[in-house]
Image 1: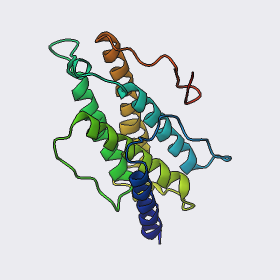
Image 2: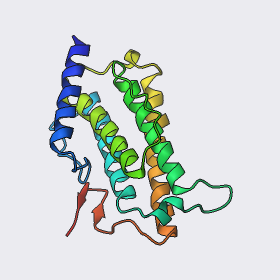
Image 3: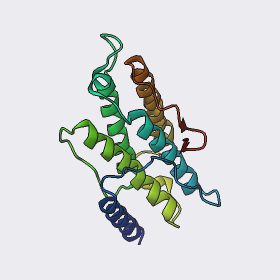
Image 4: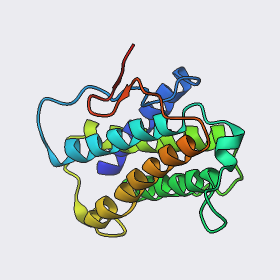
Length: 184
């Protein structure tokens, strides 16, 4: 039954993607639910990550993507590649019945879109299902997903913001990460 519900939510996500093909999720954070549940809290964490990633990567230029602070550091594009991998790990762990095993070389735009869609799919499933998320349903303990790839992706979003500032393309000052909205 749980796989059927997750499959239904996944299909609804795909249909929503098709309707908004050019509109990426997380321009703003969706409204928060009226109650705290384990699922809604984790979904909100993913929404915050998606919002930060959206704005950390919005408007990046080739010189920003190629910027590398030192010979030993990662270029911005390499950090974005790592966040994409983390988004796939999170998605594959939470949506264990649907795996994203894509290994194609993607453009920055495609990688950005897939990363945002991975976050959105996970958040939607967690927020829109009545079935409690069971820790034993993941390949690794869910606690490790929180302190591992979710926290790591947040960390790396901050690095992208720092790198883009260093390459001369600062983060949009109208973005309010506290409210999850964009000012005028």
